[in-house]
Image (cartoon, rainbow over all chains, first blue to last red; front, side, top):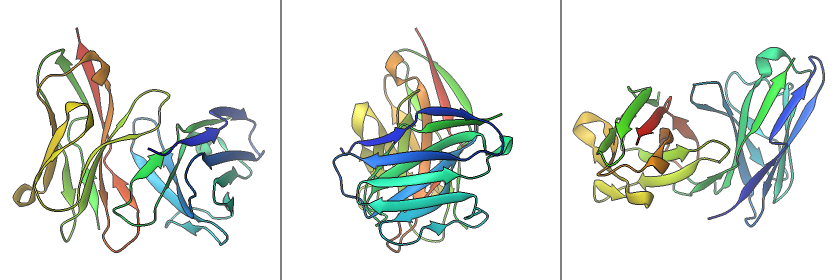
Length: 116
Length: 114
């Protein structure tokens, strides 16, 4: 299956700073990528849909000004956590795959964000 | 609204024993159903999926799952567990309508005793 990478794998930052997480689809041109957030011992929650060449679609309750998503190319989507706070500490996972419900999603290994 | 319930947070089995992980869903129609496995440091890997047709679905690594509409369930099974199966398992439901949005259950952590 397709390979999806994320960088960095883990990051620690100070409160108030911004952090950028990259998601790359290494062998698959993805017009759509998805960003999930996983809390400790909790499930994955869809944050937003990243659309190549257009604005991201955010799920209800997700602050679009806080979690900036850019999908500048068919193989790269970035999630920037702006003005990070300790409550933003989480595991962020991206997926690459088709837009249809029947399309297989390929998950990145995730990025562990810790905000001090 | 769609939802997925995995009643068992943590399960421990002995190596070689059979395994069943429970999953119940709430959805207005026949959903698309998935089981994923997450190992430490690895991305989620698709074990199997159900869209339609035969309600018994075979997946990778010797796993299978059975869709039971009457019980709104999609339980994952394996006849003989290996130590390498220790991981977190997630059941997920996908919406019809051309939009690949997955709703995940809380996950079941599987521990395997030698």
